[in-house]
Length: 344
Image (cartoon, rainbow, N blue to C red; front, top):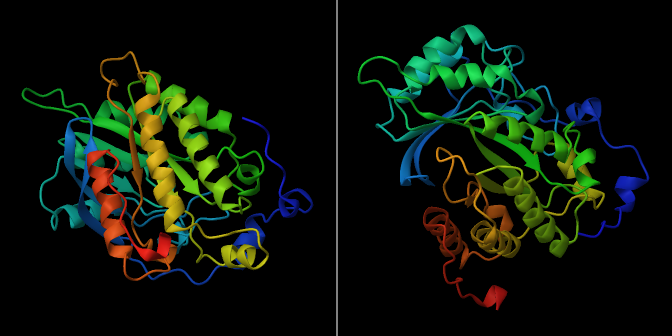
Protein backbone atom coordinates (compact mmCIF):
# COMPACT_ATOMS: atom_id res chain seq x y z
CA UNK A 1 0.00 0.00 0.00
CA UNK A 2 1.41 3.38 -0.98
CA UNK A 3 2.34 5.89 1.68
CA UNK A 4 -0.49 8.43 2.22
CA UNK A 5 0.02 12.16 1.91
CA UNK A 6 0.54 13.82 5.28
CA UNK A 7 -2.37 16.02 6.35
CA UNK A 8 -0.90 19.49 6.68
CA UNK A 9 -2.51 20.04 10.07
CA UNK A 10 -0.96 16.85 11.43
CA UNK A 11 2.49 17.27 9.95
CA UNK A 12 3.13 20.96 10.57
CA UNK A 13 2.28 21.44 14.24
CA UNK A 14 2.60 19.64 17.54
CA UNK A 15 -0.33 17.40 18.40
CA UNK A 16 -2.45 17.70 21.56
CA UNK A 17 -1.06 15.91 24.60
CA UNK A 18 -2.56 14.95 27.94
CA UNK A 19 -2.78 18.50 29.25
CA UNK A 20 -4.50 19.92 26.18
CA UNK A 21 -6.91 16.97 25.95
CA UNK A 22 -7.92 17.13 29.62
CA UNK A 23 -8.31 20.93 29.59
CA UNK A 24 -11.12 20.75 27.01
CA UNK A 25 -13.10 18.00 28.71
CA UNK A 26 -16.65 18.58 29.93
CA UNK A 27 -17.48 17.34 33.46
CA UNK A 28 -17.54 13.62 34.21
CA UNK A 29 -20.84 11.87 34.77
CA UNK A 30 -21.79 11.05 38.35
CA UNK A 31 -20.98 7.40 39.00
CA UNK A 32 -21.01 5.00 41.95
CA UNK A 33 -17.97 2.82 42.68
CA UNK A 34 -20.30 0.01 43.79
CA UNK A 35 -22.48 0.04 40.65
CA UNK A 36 -21.68 -0.54 36.98
CA UNK A 37 -22.67 2.54 35.02
CA UNK A 38 -24.55 0.35 32.54
CA UNK A 39 -25.26 -3.31 31.84
CA UNK A 40 -27.36 -5.26 29.37
CA UNK A 41 -27.76 -8.60 27.65
CA UNK A 42 -27.04 -8.68 23.93
CA UNK A 43 -26.71 -11.27 21.18
CA UNK A 44 -23.45 -11.73 19.35
CA UNK A 45 -22.07 -14.26 16.90
CA UNK A 46 -19.26 -16.33 18.42
CA UNK A 47 -17.35 -19.50 17.67
CA UNK A 48 -20.41 -21.66 18.29
CA UNK A 49 -22.98 -19.48 16.53
CA UNK A 50 -25.15 -16.73 18.00
CA UNK A 51 -24.61 -16.42 21.75
CA UNK A 52 -26.19 -14.42 24.52
CA UNK A 53 -23.70 -12.07 26.16
CA UNK A 54 -24.02 -10.27 29.48
CA UNK A 55 -22.19 -6.99 28.92
CA UNK A 56 -21.13 -5.04 32.01
CA UNK A 57 -19.78 -1.49 31.77
CA UNK A 58 -17.86 -1.30 35.02
CA UNK A 59 -17.01 1.85 36.96
CA UNK A 60 -13.35 2.27 37.87
CA UNK A 61 -10.11 4.13 37.40
CA UNK A 62 -9.67 6.15 34.25
CA UNK A 63 -7.34 4.75 31.60
CA UNK A 64 -3.73 5.89 31.92
CA UNK A 65 -3.64 6.63 28.18
CA UNK A 66 -5.42 9.88 27.22
CA UNK A 67 -6.41 9.01 23.68
CA UNK A 68 -7.46 11.97 21.56
CA UNK A 69 -10.83 10.56 20.51
CA UNK A 70 -11.82 8.76 23.73
CA UNK A 71 -14.89 9.65 25.76
CA UNK A 72 -14.94 6.62 28.06
CA UNK A 73 -13.38 8.66 30.88
CA UNK A 74 -16.82 10.28 31.36
CA UNK A 75 -17.93 7.28 33.44
CA UNK A 76 -14.76 6.71 35.48
CA UNK A 77 -13.58 7.54 39.00
CA UNK A 78 -11.14 10.30 39.93
CA UNK A 79 -8.67 7.82 41.45
CA UNK A 80 -7.85 4.11 41.67
CA UNK A 81 -10.68 1.59 41.83
CA UNK A 82 -11.37 0.66 45.49
CA UNK A 83 -10.68 -2.98 46.43
CA UNK A 84 -13.81 -5.08 46.12
CA UNK A 85 -15.69 -2.52 44.02
CA UNK A 86 -15.49 -4.48 40.77
CA UNK A 87 -16.77 -7.63 42.53
CA UNK A 88 -19.71 -5.72 43.99
CA UNK A 89 -20.52 -4.27 40.56
CA UNK A 90 -20.48 -7.71 38.94
CA UNK A 91 -22.78 -9.06 41.65
CA UNK A 92 -25.16 -6.13 41.20
CA UNK A 93 -25.43 -6.58 37.43
CA UNK A 94 -25.62 -10.36 37.34
CA UNK A 95 -28.39 -10.37 39.94
CA UNK A 96 -30.43 -8.33 37.44
CA UNK A 97 -29.50 -10.10 34.20
CA UNK A 98 -30.63 -13.48 32.88
CA UNK A 99 -28.17 -16.32 32.35
CA UNK A 100 -25.94 -15.98 29.29
CA UNK A 101 -23.37 -17.89 27.27
CA UNK A 102 -20.59 -15.31 27.55
CA UNK A 103 -19.71 -12.19 29.51
CA UNK A 104 -17.97 -8.91 28.72
CA UNK A 105 -16.29 -6.99 31.53
CA UNK A 106 -15.57 -3.59 29.99
CA UNK A 107 -14.12 -1.14 32.49
CA UNK A 108 -13.44 1.97 30.32
CA UNK A 109 -9.75 1.37 31.03
CA UNK A 110 -7.33 -1.55 31.12
CA UNK A 111 -8.43 -4.69 32.89
CA UNK A 112 -4.84 -5.66 33.68
CA UNK A 113 -3.90 -2.30 35.18
CA UNK A 114 -3.81 -3.19 38.91
CA UNK A 115 -5.06 0.30 39.80
CA UNK A 116 -8.12 -0.27 37.61
CA UNK A 117 -8.83 -3.88 38.63
CA UNK A 118 -6.99 -4.81 41.85
CA UNK A 119 -5.15 -8.13 41.52
CA UNK A 120 -6.46 -9.13 44.95
CA UNK A 121 -9.96 -9.14 43.43
CA UNK A 122 -9.09 -11.69 40.73
CA UNK A 123 -10.17 -14.78 42.74
CA UNK A 124 -13.61 -13.33 43.48
CA UNK A 125 -14.05 -12.11 39.90
CA UNK A 126 -13.01 -15.49 38.52
CA UNK A 127 -15.44 -17.27 40.80
CA UNK A 128 -18.27 -15.24 39.26
CA UNK A 129 -17.30 -15.61 35.59
CA UNK A 130 -15.81 -19.11 35.45
CA UNK A 131 -19.00 -20.71 34.15
CA UNK A 132 -19.21 -18.54 31.02
CA UNK A 133 -18.14 -19.87 27.63
CA UNK A 134 -16.18 -16.71 26.85
CA UNK A 135 -14.91 -13.95 29.13
CA UNK A 136 -14.08 -10.76 27.22
CA UNK A 137 -12.10 -7.91 28.78
CA UNK A 138 -10.37 -4.84 27.33
CA UNK A 139 -6.74 -3.82 27.64
CA UNK A 140 -4.10 -1.61 25.98
CA UNK A 141 -1.62 -3.62 23.87
CA UNK A 142 1.32 -2.24 25.85
CA UNK A 143 -0.14 -3.62 29.10
CA UNK A 144 -0.32 -7.21 27.87
CA UNK A 145 1.78 -9.60 29.94
CA UNK A 146 1.83 -12.32 32.58
CA UNK A 147 -1.25 -11.01 34.39
CA UNK A 148 -3.28 -12.05 31.34
CA UNK A 149 -1.97 -15.60 31.73
CA UNK A 150 -2.73 -15.61 35.45
CA UNK A 151 -6.31 -14.62 34.76
CA UNK A 152 -6.61 -17.11 31.89
CA UNK A 153 -5.44 -19.93 34.14
CA UNK A 154 -7.94 -18.93 36.80
CA UNK A 155 -10.85 -19.45 34.40
CA UNK A 156 -10.30 -23.20 34.38
CA UNK A 157 -12.22 -25.05 37.08
CA UNK A 158 -10.32 -28.20 38.06
CA UNK A 159 -13.06 -29.51 40.34
CA UNK A 160 -15.02 -32.62 39.24
CA UNK A 161 -17.59 -31.51 36.69
CA UNK A 162 -16.06 -28.05 36.55
CA UNK A 163 -15.65 -26.15 33.34
CA UNK A 164 -13.75 -23.13 32.21
CA UNK A 165 -14.23 -20.44 29.63
CA UNK A 166 -11.96 -18.97 26.99
CA UNK A 167 -10.37 -15.60 27.67
CA UNK A 168 -10.70 -12.97 24.95
CA UNK A 169 -8.92 -9.63 25.17
CA UNK A 170 -10.14 -6.64 23.19
CA UNK A 171 -7.44 -4.14 22.24
CA UNK A 172 -7.75 -0.77 20.56
CA UNK A 173 -5.69 -0.77 17.38
CA UNK A 174 -7.78 2.14 16.01
CA UNK A 175 -5.87 2.72 12.74
CA UNK A 176 -2.57 1.87 11.09
CA UNK A 177 -2.46 5.25 9.30
CA UNK A 178 1.13 6.43 9.85
CA UNK A 179 0.08 10.00 10.70
CA UNK A 180 -3.25 9.54 12.43
CA UNK A 181 -2.17 6.84 14.90
CA UNK A 182 0.85 8.73 16.35
CA UNK A 183 -1.26 11.90 16.54
CA UNK A 184 -3.93 10.24 18.68
CA UNK A 185 -1.81 10.26 21.87
CA UNK A 186 -2.40 6.52 22.23
CA UNK A 187 1.33 5.74 22.66
CA UNK A 188 0.97 2.75 20.34
CA UNK A 189 2.48 1.53 17.10
CA UNK A 190 1.10 -1.19 14.82
CA UNK A 191 4.05 -3.37 15.84
CA UNK A 192 3.07 -2.97 19.51
CA UNK A 193 -0.33 -4.39 18.60
CA UNK A 194 1.19 -7.21 16.57
CA UNK A 195 3.51 -8.21 19.42
CA UNK A 196 0.64 -8.20 21.92
CA UNK A 197 -1.61 -10.22 19.62
CA UNK A 198 1.16 -12.75 18.96
CA UNK A 199 1.78 -13.15 22.69
CA UNK A 200 -1.91 -13.69 23.42
CA UNK A 201 -2.71 -16.11 20.63
CA UNK A 202 0.44 -18.13 21.35
CA UNK A 203 -0.97 -18.65 24.85
CA UNK A 204 -4.47 -19.64 23.75
CA UNK A 205 -6.09 -16.25 24.35
CA UNK A 206 -8.39 -14.84 21.70
CA UNK A 207 -7.91 -11.31 20.36
CA UNK A 208 -10.53 -8.75 19.42
CA UNK A 209 -9.42 -5.50 17.77
CA UNK A 210 -11.22 -2.15 17.91
CA UNK A 211 -10.93 -0.26 14.60
CA UNK A 212 -11.99 3.36 14.07
CA UNK A 213 -13.74 4.78 11.03
CA UNK A 214 -12.67 8.39 10.43
CA UNK A 215 -10.32 9.01 13.35
CA UNK A 216 -8.83 12.51 13.55
CA UNK A 217 -6.58 13.53 10.64
CA UNK A 218 -8.22 11.19 8.12
CA UNK A 219 -10.62 13.70 6.62
CA UNK A 220 -11.35 12.33 3.14
CA UNK A 221 -14.36 9.98 3.11
CA UNK A 222 -12.84 7.47 0.70
CA UNK A 223 -9.56 7.44 2.61
CA UNK A 224 -11.50 6.88 5.81
CA UNK A 225 -13.07 3.73 4.39
CA UNK A 226 -9.79 2.53 2.87
CA UNK A 227 -7.77 2.92 6.05
CA UNK A 228 -10.42 1.26 8.19
CA UNK A 229 -10.41 -1.77 5.89
CA UNK A 230 -6.60 -1.88 5.81
CA UNK A 231 -6.56 -1.71 9.61
CA UNK A 232 -8.96 -4.67 9.78
CA UNK A 233 -6.62 -6.54 7.41
CA UNK A 234 -3.61 -5.77 9.61
CA UNK A 235 -5.47 -6.90 12.75
CA UNK A 236 -6.44 -10.22 11.19
CA UNK A 237 -2.95 -10.79 9.79
CA UNK A 238 -1.56 -10.08 13.28
CA UNK A 239 -3.68 -12.85 14.78
CA UNK A 240 -6.96 -11.19 15.78
CA UNK A 241 -9.99 -13.41 15.37
CA UNK A 242 -12.51 -10.59 15.63
CA UNK A 243 -12.65 -6.90 14.63
CA UNK A 244 -15.18 -4.38 15.89
CA UNK A 245 -15.51 -1.24 13.76
CA UNK A 246 -16.49 1.93 15.60
CA UNK A 247 -17.53 5.22 14.02
CA UNK A 248 -15.43 7.97 15.62
CA UNK A 249 -17.77 10.44 17.31
CA UNK A 250 -17.44 13.93 18.80
CA UNK A 251 -18.39 14.81 22.35
CA UNK A 252 -15.23 14.85 24.46
CA UNK A 253 -14.18 18.48 24.00
CA UNK A 254 -11.00 18.10 21.97
CA UNK A 255 -12.90 16.45 19.11
CA UNK A 256 -15.06 19.54 18.68
CA UNK A 257 -11.91 21.66 18.46
CA UNK A 258 -10.45 19.32 15.84
CA UNK A 259 -13.69 19.36 13.88
CA UNK A 260 -13.74 23.16 13.85
CA UNK A 261 -10.17 23.15 12.54
CA UNK A 262 -11.02 20.65 9.81
CA UNK A 263 -8.91 17.91 11.39
CA UNK A 264 -11.86 15.63 12.17
CA UNK A 265 -14.77 14.88 9.86
CA UNK A 266 -17.57 12.70 11.25
CA UNK A 267 -18.15 9.57 9.18
CA UNK A 268 -21.38 8.90 7.32
CA UNK A 269 -23.73 5.96 7.49
CA UNK A 270 -22.81 5.23 3.87
CA UNK A 271 -19.15 4.94 4.90
CA UNK A 272 -19.93 2.64 7.82
CA UNK A 273 -21.95 0.36 5.55
CA UNK A 274 -19.15 0.34 2.97
CA UNK A 275 -16.48 -0.55 5.55
CA UNK A 276 -18.59 -3.36 6.97
CA UNK A 277 -19.28 -4.83 3.54
CA UNK A 278 -15.60 -4.76 2.54
CA UNK A 279 -14.41 -6.09 5.89
CA UNK A 280 -16.83 -9.04 5.79
CA UNK A 281 -15.51 -9.95 2.35
CA UNK A 282 -11.95 -9.60 3.60
CA UNK A 283 -12.64 -11.87 6.58
CA UNK A 284 -13.78 -14.63 4.26
CA UNK A 285 -10.94 -14.18 1.77
CA UNK A 286 -7.94 -14.30 4.14
CA UNK A 287 -6.23 -17.64 4.92
CA UNK A 288 -7.16 -19.77 7.93
CA UNK A 289 -6.36 -17.68 11.06
CA UNK A 290 -4.73 -20.38 13.18
CA UNK A 291 -3.45 -23.92 13.09
CA UNK A 292 -4.28 -24.31 16.77
CA UNK A 293 -7.56 -26.28 16.97
CA UNK A 294 -8.53 -24.30 20.08
CA UNK A 295 -8.36 -21.04 18.10
CA UNK A 296 -9.47 -22.32 14.70
CA UNK A 297 -12.70 -20.65 13.66
CA UNK A 298 -13.95 -18.14 11.17
CA UNK A 299 -12.97 -14.54 11.51
CA UNK A 300 -15.70 -12.22 12.72
CA UNK A 301 -16.40 -8.57 11.93
CA UNK A 302 -18.84 -6.36 13.80
CA UNK A 303 -19.88 -2.73 13.57
CA UNK A 304 -20.85 -0.89 16.73
CA UNK A 305 -24.41 0.37 16.20
CA UNK A 306 -24.74 2.03 19.60
CA UNK A 307 -25.62 5.74 19.33
CA UNK A 308 -24.92 5.99 15.59
CA UNK A 309 -27.82 8.32 14.88
CA UNK A 310 -25.33 11.15 14.32
CA UNK A 311 -24.15 9.38 11.16
CA UNK A 312 -27.44 9.80 9.31
CA UNK A 313 -29.06 12.90 7.86
CA UNK A 314 -32.21 11.04 6.80
CA UNK A 315 -34.91 10.19 9.35
CA UNK A 316 -36.80 7.99 6.88
CA UNK A 317 -34.29 5.18 6.39
CA UNK A 318 -32.09 5.30 9.50
CA UNK A 319 -33.93 2.70 11.57
CA UNK A 320 -34.02 0.22 8.70
CA UNK A 321 -30.34 0.75 7.91
CA UNK A 322 -29.35 0.30 11.56
CA UNK A 323 -31.45 -2.88 11.69
CA UNK A 324 -29.64 -4.12 8.57
CA UNK A 325 -26.27 -3.61 10.26
CA UNK A 326 -27.49 -5.44 13.36
CA UNK A 327 -28.65 -8.35 11.20
CA UNK A 328 -25.30 -8.46 9.40
CA UNK A 329 -23.56 -8.52 12.78
CA UNK A 330 -25.49 -11.66 13.70
CA UNK A 331 -25.34 -13.49 10.38
CA UNK A 332 -21.87 -12.32 9.24
CA UNK A 333 -23.32 -12.05 5.74
CA UNK A 334 -24.02 -9.06 3.51
CA UNK A 335 -27.70 -8.13 3.33
CA UNK A 336 -29.47 -6.21 0.60
CA UNK A 337 -28.98 -2.44 1.07
CA UNK A 338 -31.97 -0.38 2.19
CA UNK A 339 -33.44 1.67 -0.64
CA UNK A 340 -34.00 5.36 0.04
CA UNK A 341 -33.93 8.50 -2.09
CA UNK A 342 -31.33 10.04 0.28
CA UNK A 343 -28.57 7.81 -1.09
CA UNK A 344 -29.95 6.84 -4.51
